[in-house]
Image 1 (cartoon, rainbow, N blue to C red):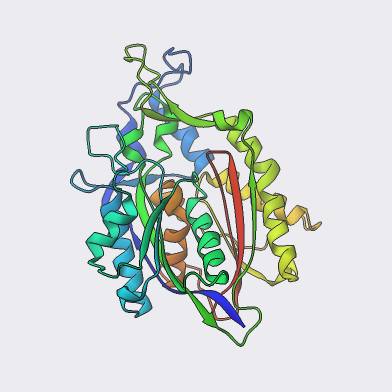
Image 2: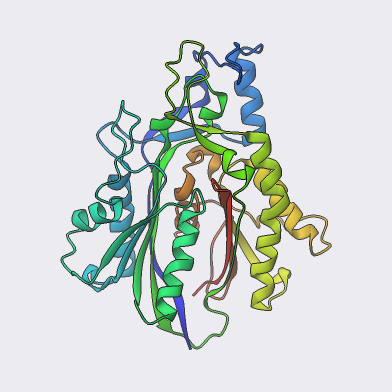
Length: 358
């Protein structure tokens, strides 16, 4: 049998560290443009307690999302040991294209995937580069999409990248701006013959709600009363997003796992979108609750949000690369381990994939 197998991974975590204390001089306003009653110090203290984020990474001014994507891609290709010319597809999941430092207008023409192909120096004209805009679940959706192309006989190898520079669409007067960060993660996915029926991409589940949910994460104007009113910043209705995720993500995870026929006790790790520590913990707890298990096993959910922040589509591939290369203390992957990828984001969109580590 043939399955989609991850044969290489890489990540680009910018070196520019922004700690919570760097926001102490910010003036935060409410949705009504009224100055927050609490001091920045109190706001930051509460923020850290809820999100778990102590610091995040921002890209240097001279680099854009496609630059981060290309660096992660180079590492993934090197790790896989393949000839880059053997790639059939380059899929880049992102949300805002390339945004130059100091500007908030996105640049998506040509596609980031085309820019990455050029930076990688790939001359194979049959290698098709394209972008995938699907909110934070974009990278997981890239896996699902590549797997479908493989099964249709239209491709055998794909480079799947998640990259964003969210630091360039943040309102400094919005406390939610402290959540987001920059980064990129990538894998090489290959359609290969396997002897183990539990190896490779085993199942997927997706969900999309596009009623009022489309307004939960959006582009809006600054909260500052001195704002020019132009919609150029990433905005989020935090409570709505939290409630939506808690209500639906665990069900998608269960659906994906149930499709494999494996018991939940077989799961070795859950790679969930690094959105918010408390929210992710609540989702995983709800997931186990669907199997009448009160508490998830210890160390089932690796996390790096504490020091990387929320880099949107880049969070899961970055986290996976860290664990795969034993760079996250307390976690490792072994051949035969059953893992689950899950994400939620703007749309609102949800997806989950079960994968047998090979």
